Image (cartoon, rainbow, N blue to C red):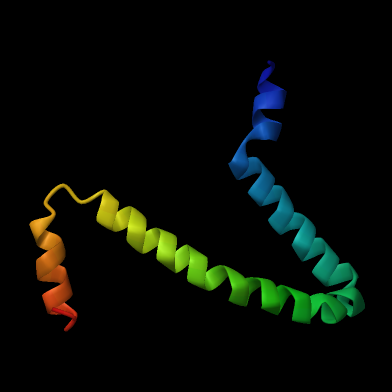
Amino acid sequence: MGDAMKLVKSLYFQILLAVLLGALVGHFGSQQAIALKPLGDAFIKMMIAPVVFCTIVTGIAGMSDKRSLGRGTRLTGHG
């Protein structure tokens, strides 16, 4: 696979491309952007809980000292 294909398949490139395309659509197609705003807001609201949950689970699973988890729960007032 060539270097160009590796770049195109790169997640960083795809995210950057999506941001640029979104900015262009928002600038040149502002009426469509206004019409799609409720859909975007709903998407963001649906993504918050799973992202927070996965972040917490990944953080707990990656802890090398499980006793520090107990100290953390006491610190937050849950223990």
